[in-house]
Structure formats: structure tokens, C-alpha cells
Length: 304
Ligand SMILES: [Mg+2]
Image 1 (spheres, helix red, strand yellow):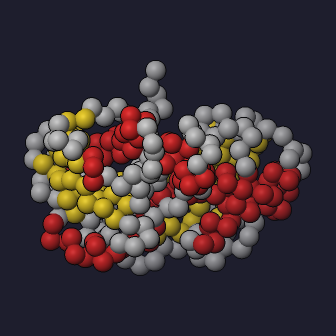
Image 2 (cartoon, helix red, strand yellow):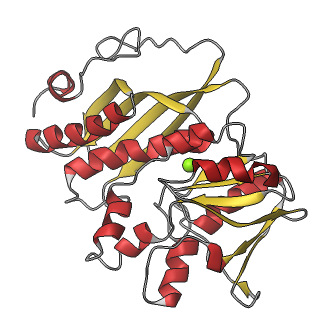
Image 3 (spheres, protein in one colour):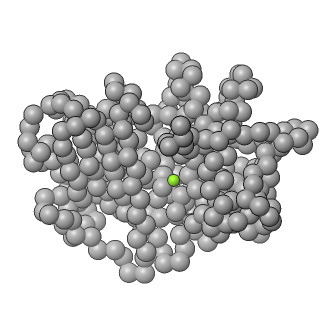
């Protein structure tokens, strides 16, 4: 196996454009812009748990960074710097070259510098830590939703989960393996949205996090939810309400911001799906006749 230093030099040492000092010293040196707060997040993908051992390394490079960019989007932050720690099973330079190309293709599209990381031998695991910037006081937090706010969803839901049951659906497979982080939308929602989260564990569960943090309830009309086309209605409900990995944004905003939010819609589309209610942090999803639908909880890594 090439040495740790060789791997970093060959595959993970593109010049940093927004760092004082990038890869190659004990630590990177970063200079946040004046007036900005740093947003920091990390996400760990484990082989056999989050992706299959034979997963396409280019898509894996994309997704490893994309899920972290999505967390920046959900905060309204502009992603700037990433660090990548990897446990690798074997000496596979072809795999590393393709993985790093997939990672950098997305990093360069979003102006993100890879400024550090670590490699070791072990069961395949990929961990990115990401830093972004957001004007002080304007981050999109989970605890800002108020009774009377609208609930909005970007793009459509359910495709990523559906891809696991129908590998022939190419659009669903793209949703699962090559999610598009909604960074520009997150930035544009600063000052408009009252709360936001990205859909990583399922719409019901992720909106539930906003409700718990904001101490409010919500009512959502299932028929209004933007949905991936799925023929089986029972499977559709499960994928749309409880499927994870869509990496769309769910956000709340006062009705006074409707026109401004509608002006942002395009790619992705933005759909108003319900209302925030005063009271307990409970989500009610109603069917076409106004009857409540029982939503399964989404993905919980520590569920038995
Ligand atoms: Mg998130």
C-alpha cells in the first residue's frame, strides 16, 4: 500500500484557494471572513451500513461530501473548508483516484477547499468534517419555527428510499447515489425562513426535529407533498414520509414571506405543504379526506 503521505500527496492535495494554509502541515490555517459565524458539521459513512462494499467510488466521493454540504445548506451557511478522514481496507490506487475525482468535482463546483484529513488501514469508513460561513445571527436553526408559519419542502421526496426497492428507476438511483445539496437555496433562505433542516432520516422524523426544537406542532397535507412517482401507494407513503437520504430542505417561514419564497422556486421547485401549530411537538399528516395518516419514524441508527 502506498504510504499515508503518498496517498495524500497523490490524491488529496489540490491547492486550497480560500485557506491561508491547506494540506501538508500539522493543521490547516483558515481565515473566516469578518462578520461571519463558522458553521461546523461532520458526517460518517461506514461501508456495509451506509453504502454497499462495491459502491461506485466516484459516486461515493460525491456523496461523502454532498451529505455534509447538505448540512451547510440546512443552516443557510456557505460551505468553505472540508477535512476527510478515511479508513481503507486495501491498496487500491484505482479506487482512490476515482473516489478523489468524485469528491473534488463536487468540492470545486461549490468552491470548497479540502484542507486536511487522515488515512489509516481498517474497515472502509469515510468521514468528512466541514466548515462554512454564515453572516452572524442569520443561520437557519431548528428552533425558530412559530405557530402560523408555513411548512415548505424543496424538490421531491421518496426517490432515494424508492431506489433501494427498484434499482431500475434511474431518477431514483440518482437521488440515492448522487444527491444535489441545496446550498444556493439555503443561502437564499437567510432572512426568509424561520427554521430549516435537511431530509437525511425521513421527512416525518426530520420535520419532527424542528417541532421539538421549536416547541410547536404541525399539520401537513399528504396530497401537497412533492413526491417521486411510485406506483404502489403504500410503498409511496413509506418512502415519502419515512424514507431518508433525499437531502432536500424542509423549512418554515411566516406567510408574509410567501411571495419572496415563490420567487426563489425553479431548480429546485418549492412546495408549501402545511402549517405550524401552537401546542405539543406533534406532526399530523392528513390524507385527502382530512383523516390522519400514521407515519412510521424514519431512520434511527441506534434503533434495535
Ligand atoms: Mg442534517
